[in-house]
Length: 337
Ligand SMILES: Cc1cc2nc3c(=O)[nH]c(=O)nc-3n(C[C@H](O)[C@H](O)[C@H](O)COP(=O)(O)OP(=O)(O)OC[C@H]3O[C@@H](n4cnc5c(N)ncnc54)[C@H](O)[C@@H]3O)c2cc1C
Figure 1 (cartoon, rainbow, N blue to C red):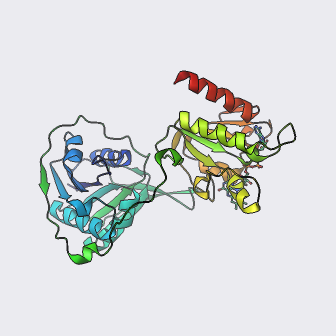
Figure 2: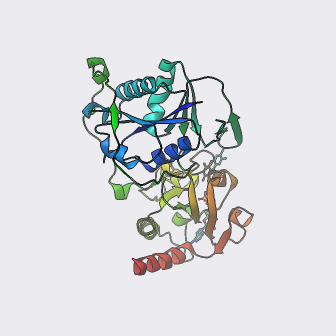
Figure 3: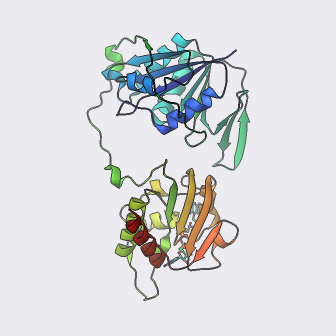
């Protein structure tokens, strides 16, 4: 029987992220003996939140040095927990923190590692995408230990009731070498300026049409910016963009200052996962729409009834002026709140 270690790091508030709870649910579905391993400044709150998950024990590495994302301390903590658990399979969320540390931990443990896993079956077949989501591969491995990093949005999140959990602390000695990298502060946009929200229920995509001349022969970029930000603020949606729109700044045209290449969805952009998507002023060309692979319900607003979305790429196409549609939607959202 496999010994499954669910490995998690805490967030700044001491809790566990949604992606982490998804990895826990995936680990639970594997059967075998489940052990939870937690890393953080303090791990009690996180342990209590998963008290009912069915783990035979909860191991923890706790202390100020483990509160921040840092390769040396994260790797040392994960290695110590994996050894204490004597795990044959280690399942963790593909957070930026674990994606950086766990492949190195696998090397130390003599383990195999699978990253960006999108599905995991009970017999440990791991599915992942290759070549920008064009080829789906299924990986089977006899090698143990085996580390599996699960992408977010691929499993339901664990939602058991909290309780009182006992944590077995595992000691990791903080040597000077582990602390060679020091976290002296953080620079991050304010939460409301952070427009990429992987957990949002809706992806709102803005296309280049927002900056093009409209029926009065003028551009209305400032109005466009306000309409878009009002929508993503009140609908709490994630903001995606077409390549043409984010490229405009390089071409000296009027641009929407809150968009960067990180917002770009598509073949050379991202492939986000959201239950719903709404494309506005975006033509729906193939290199853009391949980035919509994991958007379950798709709608688009375009003036052109022959745009790409009309060709089987959207469930619903509204042939309409997006300026008018989004202004009305924002009005309705405001009235609702
Ligand atoms: C190798 C390669 C890789 C690429 N990778 C990507 C990628 O990753 N992501 C990506 O997005 N693109 C990518 N592209 C580019 C892609 O092919 C398209 O050029 C791009 O998606 C077009 O962007 P757009 O639809 O915003 O702009 P446009 O094609 O300019 O379309 C603007 C649309 O806005 C509509 N519109 C204008 N005003 C209004 C209004 N008031 N109301 C409603 N609709 C309105 C117009 O009818 C038009 O359909 C790639 C291309 C290549 C060759």
